[in-house]
Image (cartoon, rainbow, N blue to C red; front, side, top):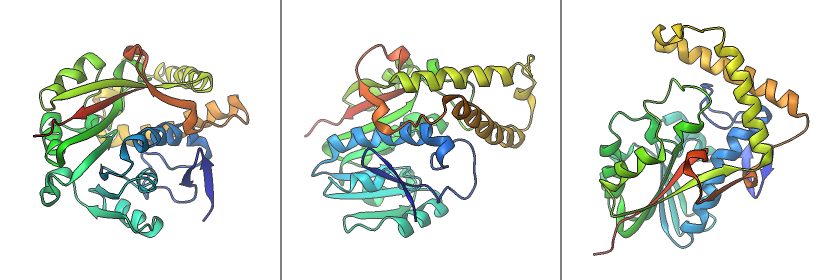
Length: 276
């Protein structure tokens, strides 16, 4: 198996998910932006995971989960997809790393065991975000921390047919504060390479959206919209990559920091449960 080296993170370049949706990382050189943005959250998480018991809720193919195991005492990755967990088990082999087919609502047997729970790019897919946050809190030991990321709606280029709802910082904060004792809200930001990529992507997407000035896509069957979304994701990224030449985007091109959260690409919430 060949690997793409990205700031110490090894991404399997020849093992994408079984079904391409245009929404997941792991699809090779045209999707280096997506992979890097996803994995940069895990780089930040390693700062919190050292010596901790960690749960990665919605681990996907485990690209980032396995990185947490390099610093954590133990890491458990869970995902509802049997295909994803099968890929994890075949690919990542570390003594302190395990993977299980489950969603958070079914992981009660693990309740209270974890010092850190990671949930990256999940909450925007859910009809019941409050219930989801309550389940995540239930996985934490007293004094534990939830690290959550989700796209900032103000910076989204276009609607995503897989997302139930995207949030602004002003919307996300009270939602989390209804469940957790304390929250620090940060942002994921990109450097000049990332800003250039996003500008080119927005221009390409807007060109495509002009073909549907009446918004008729919103009346199409969801399955058809998702089919088109996946195909157009490839078209857009290949167009952008062609314009950027040999430029490659890696996780270190992104950073987590405070600042103007309206300009953040992703919202990053550090949520704490007070010790008893």
